[in-house]
Length: 466
Image (tube, rainbow, N blue to C red; front, side, top):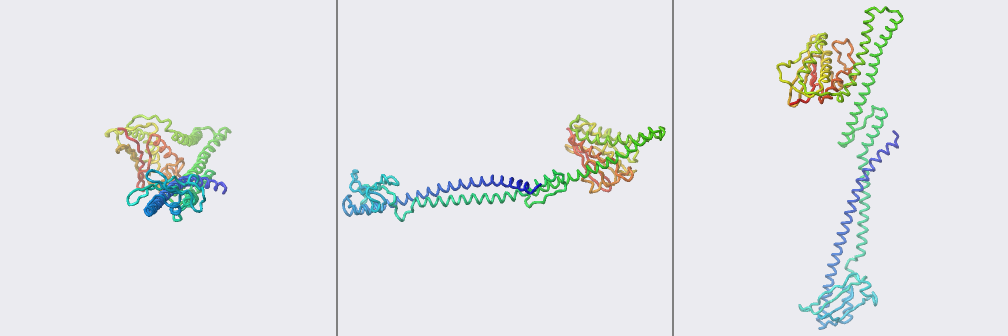
């Protein structure tokens, strides 16, 4: 895979994750900014209202002092102008009957005719004029634009500054969150990108590729699973190549012999006497056996589709399988001990009897092959809770530790030498594979329960019927 494609994979994964997380963070930040803006500006307006209310109360108190001093609501223009400047708006003084006693509609520096109607920033406020505890009139104040008290914060300026700060903070926070999210996402997805590259290499046929183990637990678990898968694929490919080579050799030798003898018979070089024909038949049977093993493997892989399950007594099935294998054990000089079913209660299971018998036969054949002359193989049935278990225990040399993880793999032949097959491992290495597949097709499992120098115990576990 090219580096450009590798970059596209990493950027694609990291960017999508960054955009998703960053967008969510940005929405949260924007919502927070809006909420803060509403809260801050609302509090600011409330503060201004309180400030103005205090200022208007102060103007009303000053007006009451002037009225008390003059003894009349008709305050002079000079005093009204001073009070209007303090109030920041035009003033109207009304008596209790509502009649205007004094008013001023212009302020110094704002210009004559600058009426409240054109420049009002708020509706007029009516404040009572109280002298010696008696309300003697009402002071109406109409604020004008540009007449704020210097001690009072400028609303427009404050709002502009607050809005600018909040917007700038929001933009900065969004950009920072996107940047941080992108960095974190790239770091999190880098192992996935590396894994994608490795997967492409495996797809291209490079089964030796492995990925480094990341620091975080989740990515490490994924990398470990990938490496284990690649290891199994590499092992399977080695077995396949070795099996193909061995099968080609095992088939090629007898076929070459068979063709040579047939040619010799056809040319008249060898007389077709009974001994020659018998030897030719033996070679043909060897070829037939090898082909039959391959057919058995193919049939076992599809056993679940052809399964015809019935309710059956497991002890009876084991008894039949043992009886069928007895001749092979007699020939190998190995004692076969089959637990009697007559004195035991039935252990019923739901299985295809023919498939299960074949699986048991393969396990027995394997045990007979690796058990030395004079040794023994015992097969028994037990009911343990909801499980029905068949155990095949031999007194062979046990399974080598390096062979144990692979004994159920097709075409695998271990390092332990068979006791009755000369110096080379016997068979094609598919007997236990076929047995495992047949047991699995019936909802069970075939496992090595124990192995040591004193022997090996295989267990077939099935679901027991009540």
